[in-house]
Image 1 (cartoon, rainbow, N blue to C red):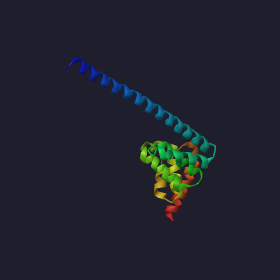
Image 2 (cartoon, one colour):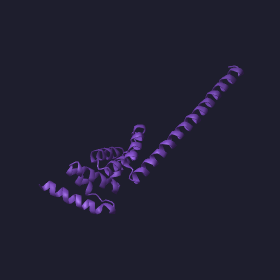
Image 3 (spheres, one colour):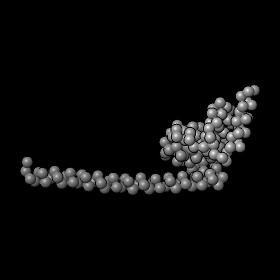
Length: 157
């Protein structure tokens, strides 16, 4: 092979690699921008929920769930927000989606209480009992004991 042919092949490969690097860098910058925007919206949603502005927090989280359907934290926060609104059907659905994505949530004591509470209110008593028999955060202990007593009464009747 002629040295000029080798030279052109080398330059072609070099140009291809350079274009790939430029494209990857550009795509990465766009992805980082979207991530920062979405993370900011997530932080805003959590803050809204914590300040009891539940409808606004729910709206923001629902937007994010559409874009990131495999992110368990979104479903977890959405479940907590629905629970705060006493919409236990939606709370249980969102919390179930969260645990489907991240089974380790069974170790989260707030999660187990909120799931048990939601299931109790939608009359899934056996499943609610199973969740509520797990350790819960101290702040929920009195409510947990009360719910377990109510479940026992309803199961016996």
